[in-house]
Image 1: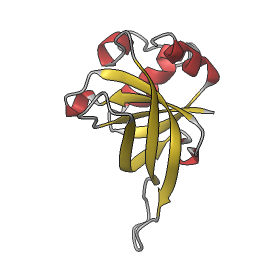
Image 2: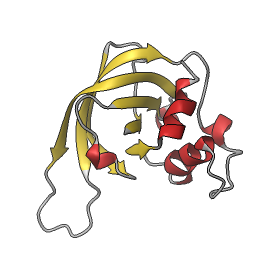
Image 3: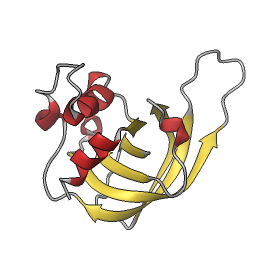
Length: 136
């Protein structure tokens, strides 16, 4: 399974991204060493959308805090960059994919990352991963 992460990314060209205590949704808590991950620099944090593809070199679940009933699982990940995006893909490029049940990979990404705009790690389909590969 492939994953995508939308996070605050200030430096777009490091060899590795170390992202601490990231929220997970849509199966994102299952991210593990060796998985392919697509990195989006969060527009909420001044980023530009898709910036890199990489491989997870470490993933560690963060323990839940006691006494809090509803908690979003969090994971810290380190990603080795394998490619930089050659074309833009972010909120403005995905905003027209709004027919939530049309099965298009762009719609899946818009739904998972921009319908609820919080930063997160999300599992993505093989079709969405193939769609994202076209940007490298």
